[in-house]
Amino acid sequence: MTHLGEVSQFPMDLKLDERLREVPESARVRGIFFRLLEQDLAKRGLKERSTWEWEGVLGEQPRSYRLYSLRPLLLAYASAGELVGPERSEGLRNVFRGVCVPYSESWFGHGLKRFLQPDLMRALQWVEKCREHFCDYGRWRLQSEGSGRATLHMVDEYLWIESAHRGGCEGLLDACGVSGEVTVELDSPFAGRLRIRWT
Image (tube, rainbow, N blue to C red; front, side, top):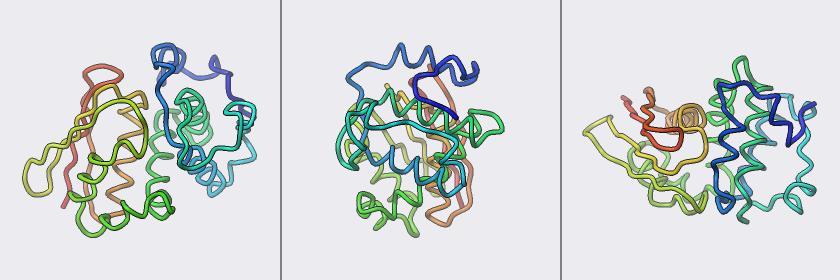
């Protein structure tokens, strides 16, 4: 069973210890992402293999719209990536891909759901414009490059761009019902871009 705070268990591919040291204490994220993680693991039959004791960590059960420190979420998603596997970074990518559609179907994601089908570009524009609905740190900028091509630039993004956000963007492709691929370019651990191509 995995507990929050056991940072040493995670392999170097996530560089979790280093990430936790560098993420500002002020970085916060909406409580819905704690809930979505629990739902995703339950759907996979893995919820009982991990315990996060939210009341002890957050002071309460997470409320969907309230902002919470990002650090416990990093720990929780890293442990989920380990459970989903086979490699932790791929497991993390898989988890983020899996939570996109349930997020769009939650009350919190109804605004996004209006744009999901069939126009992926409008969905990406909504995500860029409404970033403050997700967290209170970092900057995203969407660059359209013609039909079926876009790049999402990320700065001061403390979740894993190469696995978590790549998986989330792949989940957005799934939710929009389009085929495509997402590639990653990193400038640093907290800055880079997702190149999105679809048909």
